[in-house]
Each structure stands twice: as structure tokens, then as C-alpha cells.
Length: 442
Image 1: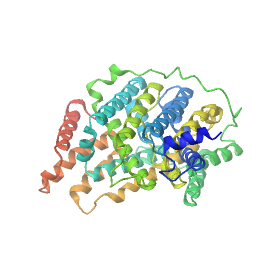
Image 2 (image 1 turned 180 degrees about the vertical axis):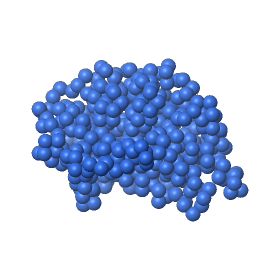
Image 3 (image 1 turned 90 degrees about the vertical axis):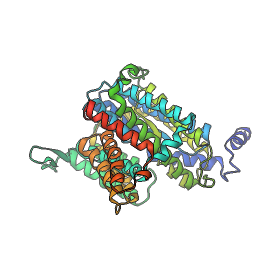
Image 4 (image 1 turned 180 degrees about the horizontal axis):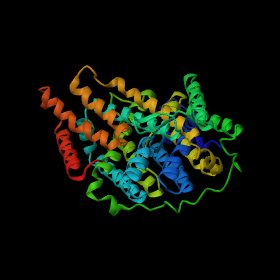
């Protein structure tokens, strides 16, 4: 009976990190609950909206999260969980598949290629060069812009914001519709849970909204709690790599790669700092962690889901005491277990009043990056502001990134500081300019 815990303790170095198996399991469960909302939101975006098979996307989401999180735990020994990234799943759906009229198979091919490039960059150590070449202001602007983008999608899906010929968009004049009232209730309920510090507030808020929705007849009552998992066949290995290699896909692949790269780097540093893992401001086993992330993206694309990335919600598990990869192993096992709860997901994820509050709240959390931008320096503020603004206005993360990357070197030249811009930024700016000239909008 004691052999397995002892073996786990040695492998994950419980003594070194001053933790134990019970604490790690509790932390892993906490992390899972804080990010379980992705199991409802991702199938809604890729399945209901992008036209992929809903059941297959649900299984792909859970398995991709399990694989990525397990790799992070076993390879890097970090208490960090992974799953299809918020923002990138919306970009995949609304910009690439619906906006550019690209088949989802080709979009999956682009995701796979971005993961492969990420892996090559990690193995060859070029990753450090790229990370250091991008100014902090633009990194924070991209995160905040994605926050506004997915919050806007949440408002649109809930029909709180509707099209208007005179003003492009406006507030829905019929706010008394049951679906809209349920959305507002879900938003307030989730906000209450978050302010009160409830673990897994977003997920608990979705469940609470679903229960109320069933009570007022807006949400169907599930026919069962458990079932055999849906077939993965409709999305498994359906990537169109040849189509994704088309030159017009540079910006798409770059957007997937860029956001995953900096999401992961930022999350790793943030979670590791909270867990006390950072050594002399450096991250031990960083290459193993980034390798796990890139392999997770590639396996996710092969299974049938958008970019898999590290989740900042992992901090919830760390706050509960998680310090090692055993936290991640626990979260991964719960992701696998979740595939048997498909009847609940099938009903709940199809109702935008349940998923929209989660999108809006996550958008709020991501927008907090705005405080890190140097607003008093116009050469920093203008590129950052337009990066943030153009993502929701053009309905494209890639367009926001491109505009920011083009403007940043220009503003620094005007400010008399051209040498403060890394050469990589000048190259990227020229590539994005050429992309606009020869291939139009992104």
C-alpha cells in the first residue's frame, strides 16, 4: 500500500517541494474545477459555431487537455494545466473558419504547423530570441485585446449586442427576452462567486445558470448524467496540412504561434513564481515545459481542437498547495473522466446564455494586462492601443497583432529610438506590410 505513494513522492520530489499526495490531489481537483468551463465553451465555439462535430470536439477538448496537462506534469514536474486556449478558439472559429471561409480541416492544419514550429523553436533555443525581441507593451496589449475580443463574442452570442445599420452595433432593445435575462443572471452569479473567492467560480456559475435555466424552461433537462463518450472519428486526423501551407496562411499560423508562445511563457513564469519554483528569476526545466506545450498543441490538432496552451487558472491549484507535477496528473485524470459526462455538456454548451457569461468574465480577467502598458509614452501607447482596439473591431486577433507590429517600429523611429527596436521586430513589420499589400486583410 505504501509503495505507490513513496514512488510518486520520489518521482515528483514531494519532500523537496514540501508537499504530499493528498495536497497535490486537492490542488489538481481545484485547478480542474477552475478551468472545466472550457469543456462547455470549446465545443460550443468549434462545434455549434464552426460546424465541426460537437461530440468529437468535446472529446478532443478533454483528451487534448489531459494529454497536455499530463505531459506538463510528468516531463516538467510543474503544477500547470493545459487545454484549448480561450481567444484562440474564438479566432479559429470566427476569423479563420467563418470570416475567411476556410474549411475547419485547413484551420486544424494551421494549428498543427504552429505547434510544430513552436517545438522547433524550443529545441533550437530560438524561442528566447523571439521572446526577448517582442516589447513587453505589445505582449500585454495582445493579451488585453484578446480579452476584449472574446468578451465581445460573448455579448454578441447572448444577443445583448446586436447589429445596427446606423451605428454598426447597439444594445438589444428587447432586454426582457428569457435568454437575455438568463445571460444577465449568469453574469451576475459568476461575478458574485468570483468576488467571494469561490473555487471554480466560472464553472460553478455556469452550472448555477444551467439549473435556473432548466427551472424557467430556457434550458432542456438532460436525459442522463453519464454515457459512453461520443466518437472521435469525425475530427481525428482530419487536418489539411497542404492547404495550411498556402502562403496566405502566414498570418494565421503566426497568430496561433505568437499567442501560444507568449501565453505559455507568461503563464509559466506567473505560476512558477507563485509556487516558489523560480530560481534567480529563471525557470528550471523551461524547455521541458515548452516542449510539453508544443506537443499538446500538435496532439490537440490531430484530435480535432484548436491551440492547446497553459492555463493561468493553474494558480488556483497552486494557491491550494500544489507544487509538483502530481497536481497536473490529477487534473489530467479528471479531464479523462469528464468525457463520460457528455449528456450534460450536450445540453448546457448549446445554450449561449450559459457559455456567454464565461466568455465575458474571462475577457475581463485578460483585460487586466492593460495596466502594464506605459500609457504616458506615446511610442508605446499608440501601437498597444491600436492592437487592443483593432482585435474586436476587425473581429481578428491576427489583424490586431499585425497593426501593432507594424506601428511599433514606426513610432520608435519617430521618437528617435530606432535602436531600441529589436531587428526581429523590423523583419516582422515588413512581413506584415507585405501581407496586407499582396493578400489583403487578415
